[in-house]
Image (tube, rainbow, N blue to C red; front, top):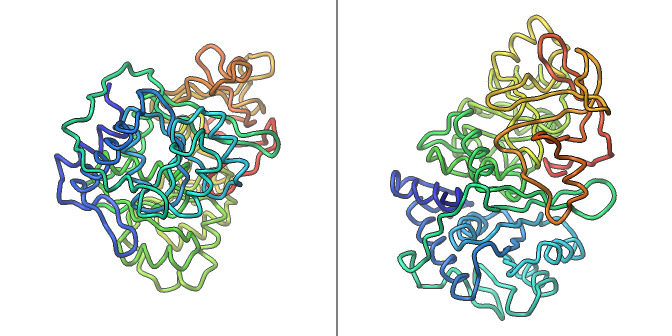
Length: 415
């Protein structure tokens, strides 16, 4: 199996070479340009000694270079370990060490200093873009024709996504080539990405908003990149670029609705807004439908299972508004190829309406936690992921979140 982060952008470059792949302010890349530049960076990593399966840490900074790097790491045979840019230097250092990263990539001078401080050796801190004291990987001229053709089993490690709760160190959630591909295809097909569409990347592209980035490659849509996720630039981007798809959390929806920039703005291009993480209040959902139209979608997923395993689409939102307002606080019903079970502490299924732990079996589920067999044993049982989230399933199949088994802070879709 080819790495999805390499294969799908390359396919887009064949199918739609002149279509826009990503927009960052006044800069943009076509799919052909993205493919060429990613191959150059991949070749630079291979030339510096990257071996298949070695980890490459990338400090998140929403930009064209971040997209190029994500594709390049996969094309070079590496395992992508994105690190949220808002983390501390100590947290970055821990992730680099825990993942045994071979290289640390930086996109800004500040992050290059972070990379140098945390990298396993001075030569392992690398820059995309011209920065003092470091070669620019984007300037590499060795092309794709000289890159190895990596074709590996579907269970091969593809990504390690680090997430943490209110206490303790970040934990590495692994994903295979197969689970990454399943998630990408879920998002692209469920929300109907197609050539010429625009998807918004206003949240960190390392985690939740990576679902906008990578699913766009499958449908030929363009990623509109923002570094400021506040309402005014988001509304301006939607209007200017005629954005069709946007991810968010309920707090973000409330901020948009409360901001004067939303009043009078032409938001008719939006076909889908997906809000997830904590459930939204029914009054907030009602306001959002009134302002944005029948475009709201919600569901339940995690870093450990990053498709939506439950789902409630626009038609269900409309029905709930008309007939069952309380249903708007749910996260929808079991959806697609996912299976959802609510179970008691003893492992037995809960009765309808009884609160228990939400368990998931889905093709986009993690195969395990990085170097953490104890967590594997606790969270992965009999082909099921025990999510740590408590909830109940009503007789009509709608799932309602109740609590966390362990406290967690959710900020911008990052746990």
